[in-house]
Length: 282
Length: 163
Image 1: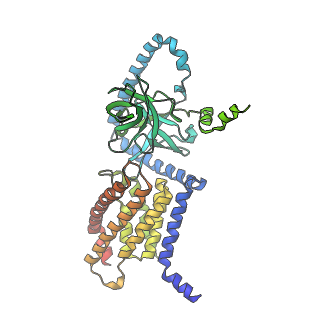
Image 2 (image 1 turned 90 degrees about the horizontal axis):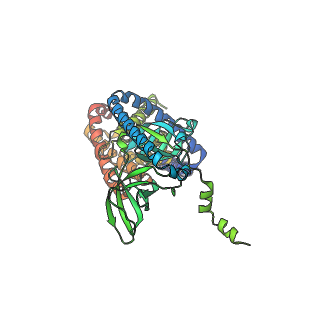
Image 3 (image 1 turned 180 degrees about the horizontal axis):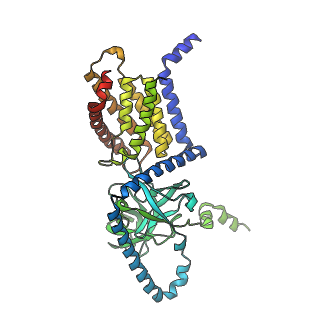
């Protein structure tokens, strides 16, 4: 027994090391659990609240720049409204088709970006709207210029956004004119260039063509601009396309959050094979 | 616990907050200096390896609370502080201030590399390959840490190390 205690004292540093490492591993494994999620949310709340105060102080110095940006956005929106109003009269016949779109502008929530990190440790945005304002996980985040990202975690007053320029972010996009579809992802490097893969070589894609989000996406509403084609490289079966992103992530201050796209029947039929099998049965 | 330990805990909290809200934003080539690693390296030289592991673990908890990635930060900081603990200089060694400073810089480099390797292995926010993240970012961060440690040592720590 005495030997055991001597050994215990002698190797106490190693034992502590193993104990702490085990706790670390345990927390990594419990990442999805409630306690961890609660701690995570509290962390976001605290971190974002402090950052919000810091940003407020900082915004005093960047007020002029922000005003200029807002003016530019307003001008852009005004021109869009004018264009849409003219197009509205001309395209009355297409209204029925447009009516079934999942885009419902009245349900959009506005939020301010209170924190943004782009380093080797973290790449994310924090917005000052949480579940109290109706934000839910997987909601689409956008600006008038285009797609920003997807909500990944929500606390009471804040939400974390996985930006489009994150290696884990993927969305199905379609070309504006030829409707060719592909999967948009960002593979690192420059923060204004993303890649679109799996576009069949038979499609008639052109340089400077606009890409928008597709209805095939499980979270994003269709028609949100993503960017323009700047490079097309043909492969054996597919095109390898580089697109210049529509959103300038370095100047983001205000964002819109689109309502959650709820298509339970679509998700069910995509994941559940028994639906088809049951129908075949007499 | 001694009064000194309470001061160190308070210092750790302040440094963790400053790191999260200030230093982590000052990036160069997407990498920033890590004040917590420098603090842990200093602790490693002045206190024992056992005490330093506990401080490393506490730094991991604080970092995890502030970033939302608790487990990974706990693991990285514990391993970092454990490796830095090998550079501990006992009081009875009668090491000179220069010898202690050298051990402090070595602890900064080793702890920085270990911490970065674990954080890079478990986290890929910029889409670089693991090898690139661990080697290039690790070396860059160690270099920044070393410069930072040199300045901090020259300005504040020399007296503490001498004592």
